[in-house]
Length: 173
Image (cartoon, rainbow, N blue to C red; front, side):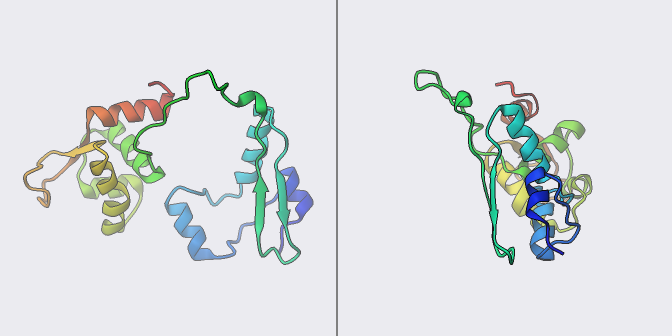
């Protein structure tokens, strides 16, 4: 069943079936999609709040591609003389953000409790997508750094990690 273009443009497009289930589930696990068909309606609402023109949406009859152009409201652009807003450096991926928030809420946690808190099972995936990037960025640290593979190993936020979480959650610097 195809989504009708008129429904898509109104933000009323709902498809409960992934076209490619593996990609859909993968994106959902990375927190890049919710899997609830709310993205288009959220985009339309935020563009309206922002004062931007409605997005331009294109596809073909076979739905072999989907293109959406988000046209910016010129009034929201920073003037050349104003200072740019500094980004969080390095960039914080959705998995790392979720890990930082989890540690902020729970203090120091071991790998198993991190997996449980994130509702994930794959040890390797959690280590490679969540823990290692957060360690490398200096957002978290090991409680036993001289024994990284210890079964007693836990992870906690660093001062830098606390600043990043505060900035992500509240917009403060």
